[in-house]
Image (tube, rainbow, N blue to C red; front, side, top):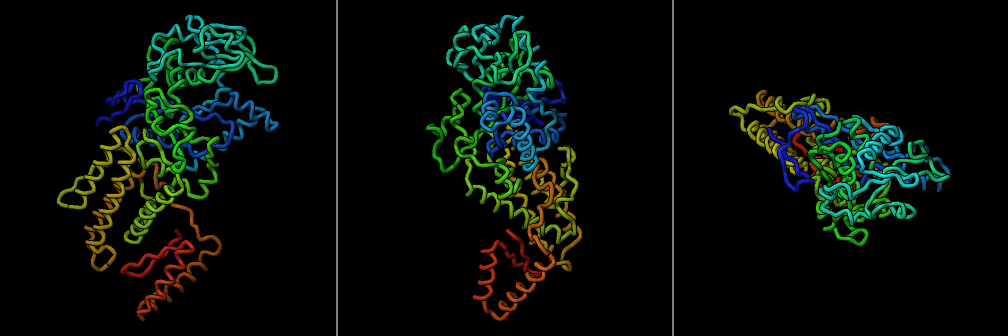
Length: 515
């Protein structure tokens, strides 16, 4: 077993070798909670939730940290606009963010530290940089001196001169334009904390260095985030941490592609090539879909499309690729998911068991199949091996999902060939092989965090009444078909489809479902 990762720092795929054998520490930059979450905020969490699941499945003990930035200029500004305190704005939007994570099945996070709850740790970190002469105090502010760090720019391939840092009053205090704030002196109308340099608050970059050190150590395994964070945020994290500790901060830097509106063509005046060039330090916030570019409320999208659809949508491409967001793409994803839903219904008809209640195989080694002379199990083993190989190759979830589709296709074909729908014709051994194949499907979908719970019933109102009415409609349609009145039968199917009801004609009758 060898997992290989694309490391932004080295621009190469590398074999994954943790700092501590058998254990993995992951840090993902979380949101600045000044407003409600949108779909772009879920790209990283869904990807790294899946990465953690796969690493645990592969036998590792994983600790995953996602921070919450709850003190920032944007939060302060939003609070003033709404007549609320910064803390009130942060609490409201953190609750929204957590609810949306839950809606997309992101539940593998172990720690969610907040900047305001780690002020003492941040101050200790800054003091260490001052003592080592990598930071200096200037009239209540503290700046990192990028000129003292010979390795600055190694992640983004950009020079210290291209880092302009904060503008405004801070410019006059800095030794060079590229220096960035570790601590900002308090203004009269802003939240502040006491420090050796006077009242103030932390800069943006320092919180991640301080909190990752506290929870994962001075050197940890994987740091993730969007391409737009490579410079300056992650570059500055590296500078702070490595100058403070004189050792590497992170072994593997993983950066996910950004979300853009497919219909936009380009966002912020820049083409999507900018996002693709981000590993060369060319990406900025202009390459991503953000609130300012019309990204809608995530809670509404979850209600419209369902969290499962959104998660599946985000996983269907490789995590380093740009995610093209469109309603057409979401509708196509829903259509793909309907094929799985039909298969799960078929499985329940054949076995009397719910796919969602099958206990998933949780360890990679436990899922190995012995095919013997059973062609189905040999095909199942082949698709399972393809799934694992694609996930081992830099967590290629898009390729892994293609193996799931092929696996369902193979299981459906086998059920048809073995006449499993005919209780008189099917053999117990064939049904047992089918069940083993479905167990593998359950194993692999669980690795991606998919199909964990049955979807909520959509009938609403009196379900028994709806079932009786649909029974009558299907009986009338069946009678029309017996009389070879296919125009009426087709008309019934068409009208039902227009109101969101799909019919499926089978050997044992016609089934219906809400689309």
